[in-house]
Length: 167
Image 1 (cartoon, rainbow, N blue to C red):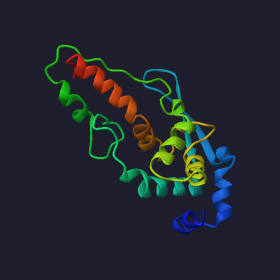
Image 2: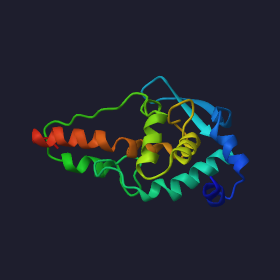
Image 3: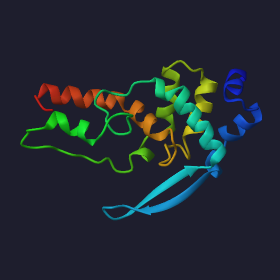
């Protein structure tokens, strides 16, 4: 924890403050969806958001998402997503309901463990990036974490499609 405290330039007490019961450090806003219904945006307060941006810049931005991930990937666009399907007679487009809230803290913890962090640091990093056991929509780390956590899912879908000559 000393190394993390030094890297973040924060006292251990501040790190611990955001590691336990961090739900109170979010502001919740409701926005209307284009398709109807309400989207819940849970935006971290300034100090927690700064920590999350550090996690994003220092850790997550150095990891590569699936080659199939186009959403939330710097330099990729909706056109990059559409290009492989150009000229196809049919295109199946899916939207995963409540995507971020279905990415659980346990998945995020496993990701941090798999990239080499010990149990304590993986727990702290997970606590910084999750709220109530899931990825909050509105945190700067949620898009990158969702892509990284879904690497295996992307691979499984890709394998399924390749076996059937689907793009």
